[in-house]
Length: 278
Image 1 (cartoon, rainbow, N blue to C red):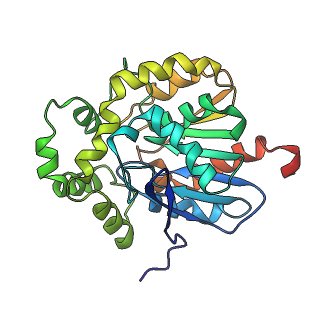
Image 2: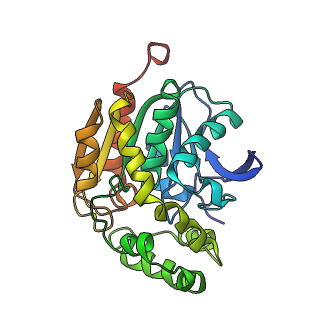
């Protein structure tokens, strides 16, 4: 047993079992999309601060964490559309959305598809341009011609990622175990489908960026070796209502520097509250 404030449960959305966790119900709602290769537990270090005055719902998108997946939904555009189905299933009309890592592209597509559903967007640490370089191991995950090795060595890939990409953020045993369980067997290789669509999906995303009017805060870790800050700068130059924050952290900033991350998110939510929330 652990004393985590995150208590996962499931809901059926469009025929798929989706795992989520939520805080106490309040008037203002926020949807948090789990990063990869992590799960809803990625938000444990920021949970108390984010949930102080807002009803937060953390979700493992289909094919990630411990939500069921299907090849058809493992790309940013379809994942963005699925966000709206999740909101419908949970009875949430309008929310703030926080989408780090793979949630960056999904959140932006969701905002482009139905802008009236979002008060604000917070993204970062996610691939944004097909023309900009990615760091390792993500570059290999996107471009390796054969994923058979990943199918056969998922546990080793996850162990290496957790040991080498999280050097400044020790994970609780229950969190580490959940991450490993989430991507066991073929799960990791199957989840790679999402980022392997980046060469085409990110070009499609670039076309819709200028039309996104929802306020977007981009949090780009300065020491991100996986997704260089240039991807955040690329988004800031094309999103008409955005703010770019370069922070002193590595890729998994929400776990490495949770106080900084939570403060930036809460500030953005406070700036973009509606009159009915005040």
